[in-house]
Amino acid sequence: MTWKTAVILSVSLIGVTSAIAGTASEIVQSRQSAMKEIAAATKVMAGMFKEPRSYSASSFGAAAREIEARAGGRLVETFAHLGAAPGSKATDAIKDDPAHFAELADNLKTYAADLEAAARDHPDAMTGDMRMKAGEAMEGGLLGITPHSSQKISAEHAFHLMLQTCASCHSRFREKS
Ligand code: HEC
Image (cartoon, rainbow, N blue to C red; front, side, top):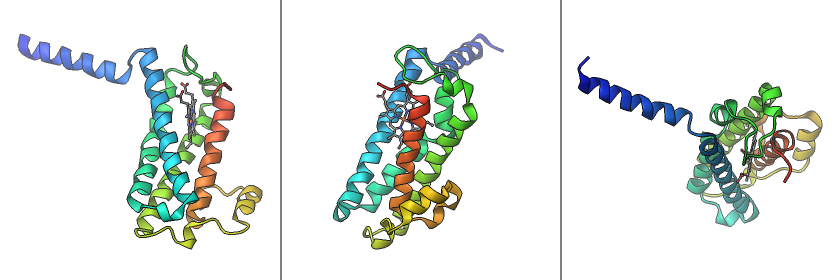
């Protein structure tokens, strides 16, 4: 190996390590800002359910994709190596029950994917079939609809189940402020 290759190699290795690890405070900051982005995307969708005439399939779909991209394995990764830490509200429960944490992170991804599919299926308007039907919430509550059967539920119901997923995860894995 020439000295030139060695330098290039070591420089790129430093780049790789810092991209994966980062300092504890960088990790905390980046996962908190990912959560803020998730929250902002949720707000965009909530606004459209509240005011269906403001619906835009492209903004709705983009918001769903924002969440999807930050959910699942990606979300788990940002908490796997560093759980509770200074400046972070993450709790030790993440380390104690990683399977439950991962399940909620996956559910978030599933609901976001359902919402993205709904945007693709409804390019022009938020039609009635995207809205929650009478009794739908109760069914979900009583029968505990799982993300796997969520294909059959309305977009609005998927949205509500997604919000419940945020709340379930926060109640166990995020410190109360
Ligand atoms: C699998 C678990 C999980 C899910 C699902 C989840 N969150 Fe979080 N969220 C956390 C944890 C843990 C923190 C604390 C992060 C920290 O302080 O390091 C957090 C923090 C936050 C914060 C505060 C960020 C800050 O500025 O400190 C917001 C806002 C937030 N989440 C919104 C949401 C919304 C909205 C959803 C659902 C659409 C959601 N979260 C889904 C685990 C989750």
